[in-house]
Image 1 (tube, rainbow, N blue to C red):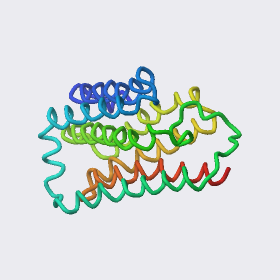
Image 2 (image 1 turned 30 degrees about the horizontal axis):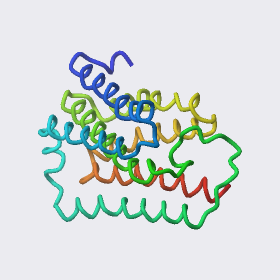
Image 3 (image 1 turned 60 degrees about the horizontal axis):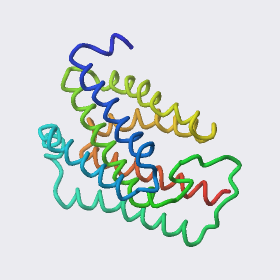
Image 4 (image 1 turned 135 degrees about the vertical axis):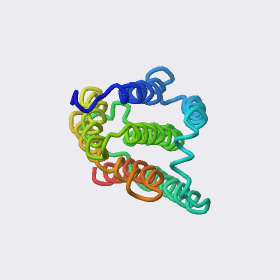
Length: 216
């Protein structure tokens, strides 16, 4: 692992860990999920700041995307998210969980999940795009980037084993490791991959909500 982290990759890695922690942990711990409008405003400001500060990165990433493609690929997962949320809230009874929800948004199906979760995922994808692009530009291969993501992205989610029920925490960690293979590859090898990553990321939460609410 030490051989993967060189001097020219330390800064983007540290920035990612710090920014990811601030955008993911800070709102839920300080604002709490009940203040979803405040969290949404905070995440919107974070997204704007990232896009302005890293304008060059995003300009290079989106240059091959046509406007209609971007609109369609962003709107589709939001529509799916809206339909999923509406269906669960109106046609599915609250399950008797064999575990505690402990603040997990897709189990609570609260306003945070409905309105702020897409913004949180959008900001996370901005951070992932920045990190992968910077690492690749520094000369790191896709294989090494994926290895780095498996370790760090997986480690970030391990804390959920202690915050949430064990089965939920392990599920988060498993899919975080799986995403560590998908997100960098999509960004670097697939046209419009950064938008597909947003679709996959949000859809994963919606499918998790559908499965847990329907199966229990």
